[in-house]
Amino acid sequence: MPQHLAPETIQQFRDQGATVLRGAFSDWIDRLREGVDYNMAHPAPNARDYRTEEGGRFLSDYCNWDRIEAYRDFIFNSPAAAIGAELMSSETVRLFHEHVIVKTPKTGMPTPWHQDLPYYSVDATQTVSIWIPMDAVPRDRTLEFVAGSHKWGKHYRPQRFDGTALNENDGLEELPDIDGNRAEYDILGWALEPGDAVAFDYRTVHGAPANNSASAQRRAFSLRLLGDDATFARREGIVTSPPFEGVTLKHGDPMDAPEFPRLM
Image (cartoon, rainbow, N blue to C red; front, side, top):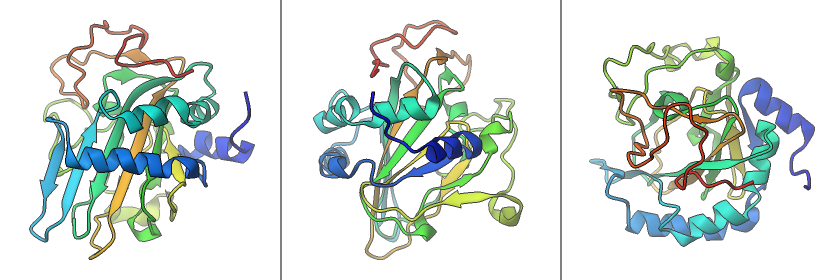
């Protein structure tokens, strides 16, 4: 199999929990834009679709790969799975889900600091999210990461994107005040052009500022991949996102189900 990534890129991902992939998906941006534009016009019934007083729109939608052909094309035919295998050091790669987030001009709604893994019905250490912007993203509006936070050994309480707790009594610790103490953390972030991407571990703490631009939108497609050690997690009494209510796997089963197709 051809090598897609430089050794230092893989090492940064493993040491810091996030890395940048310059130009990795330049050949796929137009195809992904087709899918995202269709998704914006036809959101799923469970999509989060917020409208702001200033006229902005914040769309968060997921698990549409089986109904949006452009997403399927990218997931099964792009180099994303091979890149994921290199980053995770995994022989196998499965799709967990795709997630699209759109912030139109004047959205004014940040993505709060959070980890992805506590939202999910999965237990794993071999994970990667590949976040691909459809539009140029300056440094002051880009996704940010707390370097090394994937090694803290903690799961923090999930929040909805409006800042409320997903599960009030989940027994998990509140995330520390990162914005109020930014100097205490090594915060990573990169200005990005279409075709670039960032890759990060599900355990890495990350967030994004509001899009207060009067003219620039920020469309992003995220691909959530799983490696060899992933197992299904049934979290009794806990809401997970995505819910995956129809999955019949038992707690601790390998992720061998139609909802999670094997890509490699």
